[in-house]
Image 1: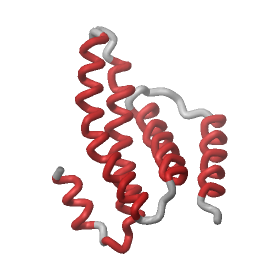
Image 2: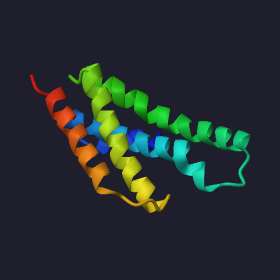
Image 3: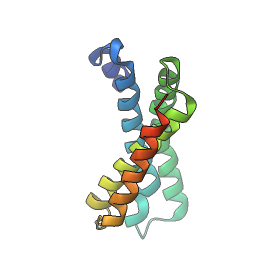
Image 4: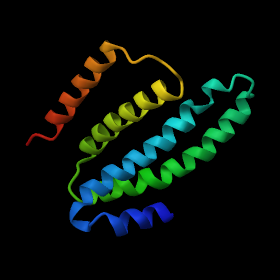
Amino acid sequence: MEVLFFIFVIIPKETSHMRTIFLLLLSNIFMTIAWYGHLKQEGLPLWKAILMAWGIAFFEYCLMVPANRMGYANGFSGFQLKMTQEVITLVVFAVFAVVYLKEPFRWNYLISFGLLLGAVYFMFRK
């Protein structure tokens, strides 16, 4: 919970949207590790991978729930929160896939991400 304290002390209240985005970013880092971190552990039994993922996902929820509550209370709609979260998830996963899984980043992924960013743009239009 020190992370939440740090976020509330360091990031000014006037920038509550940035607090929301920062919490979403941190939660998605935990989520990506929980969901995909075990893929390179071929000898790990499935039941252990599931328990480890649940343990890591607990921290994801400890960040995601406050992020969504704060964002909603400060003017994000549910749709805007979800779309923002999805884009953050893709960015975090792209870094994870290239750095940890050693997968190549191809041109068609970049175009797909660009189209999703376009979706976010239109989501926030009045």
